[in-house]
Image (cartoon, rainbow, N blue to C red; front, side, top):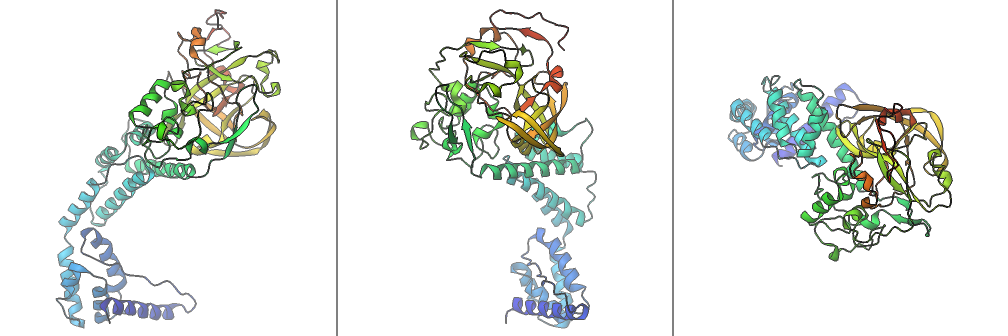
Length: 511
């Protein structure tokens, strides 16, 4: 019979004895002793458990303890035990010999610090951030068990951990520090915990099948259904080439906020297919049949403004209702039913072939682990503000349950029931000291309207103005609707109407 089997038999026998002497109705699972192979980092937890379960157990004889000790050791530790033949009197000698070899405080601390300083560099994925967090916590716990005072180590440890972070995570950590006071390790642990859990949830959601959505095309054609996975059926699980996180390029907030030229540069420099936005091949080798939904050329819809060569817009008359420095325009197809457009557009003739430029803004939203960009539609005709549910979940915003409320005329439906709202903390793109808190109702979607592409050269009057959304002429998703409840706080100075139809500057009614 092997020593390991004999030790297991003794453990089982002892457990049965203990159980029968304490409670006949409770049967607890058998506790397995860890196996010690001679690694110094394994010694502390092994020694603590063996001492508690075996060495200090007065119901066991020394010969039983000897076989427990021998059965839980391998390699070099087992060689030490084998120097002492099995007997009652040799147990203490074998145990002390093992402790003498591995209870080396200087060597243990050296090994722990080596582990702490050798934590691999994070690449921005949830698994690498989790490893950074867990390895640091484990090392500090081992140091405390050796009675090392680490209470004053926080500045050094925080510096060490931030050097191990990827660029984006480190940026978000710096943004999360609200004062010039030195942060403590618990703050950093909480930040990393929130970050890796958020990334884990996002990565899981990216691996789920995409739902079908409606996309409106041109005035003469009926709306059609397409699946988001048409362009992204071969979603890559590799690191995003733009932000180094674990998500597809087409879902990268940083990439979506870039200008057309910058997007084109990112794609060309990183060998990314212009058709499916996956790295590793060019569009000629792409097996995805989908094409740009705006011009049907061989590029992704997100890259339309950067790659389209012939965008024809016949019979287009542009009407700009209100433009301000902190607001700009997003084009919506005139083919939508008139009843879906808010009252501030009611003056447009129903039969007029035109495109309506609505006021939008690219905003910064604060969230638990930093800030992110989102596109907002500024609508003074709406009595309340709204936010997309998907964005709230992605940013892990604190949702508050409210009494069921019915909203009219939102999301291409006559009535919408709302059960949750959230406090959005917005920051200006041009003045980081300006903050705005918005109470927004949470909707499954803000609108069914799909902005169409506009040639910026058709709007020469806009070129000399600093716009809140420099990419207003590009199709993009609306995540937030800012209503009349905050409209006065968004508008600062009235600027102009297109084609030299000016509005007096510094209108006293404008803030």
